[in-house]
Length: 226
Image 1 (cartoon, helix red, strand yellow):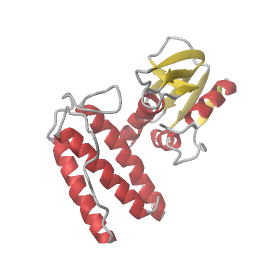
Image 2 (cartoon, helix red, strand yellow):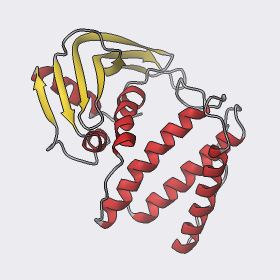
Image 3 (cartoon, rainbow, N blue to C red):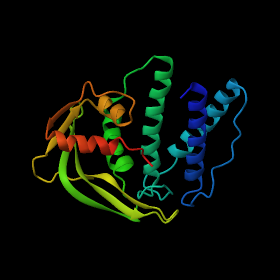
């Protein structure tokens, strides 16, 4: 990112989700039209306007109410959570841009670890199937006392939008199975969250157990989120 591209991205994103919450539960046909200002000062002003409108709209909505989303969670709560994490990671992008990184809130980052694994990497669309394979991994968030259990497997299915058949490595977040994990990945919430989003390295992350299981997990989360 450069600062202008990042700012325009967040303006478009928050403008789009403001439309979704305002018009819930209608399915959006296209994003509300926005024209990118030529001047940076005008872009800042537009972001301030759209972000304030989004915060006001979201803040007046019940998280349990029905609203469109691209996930299987069709509630306003999905937007609360997803956009909190989108804003957090892009705030980090802005700070990395200028070389002035500040601490991430541990509770928010801890939830970000679970959301990244369960929703962004592990979300299974209804047109496909997740098939478990050998390999059970536990992610320990050491400063928030969280544990996220991850089952390795494969995703298969035919995308109804383009007819493309998909067959690829996948993961699924599961309840504690009562068994010992094959591998454990441990680290602070902020470190794990930024690592999952490829904004940080793994220097503070510790891996124990079957290295082959970890390597398969790492190969899976190194794929693009699409």
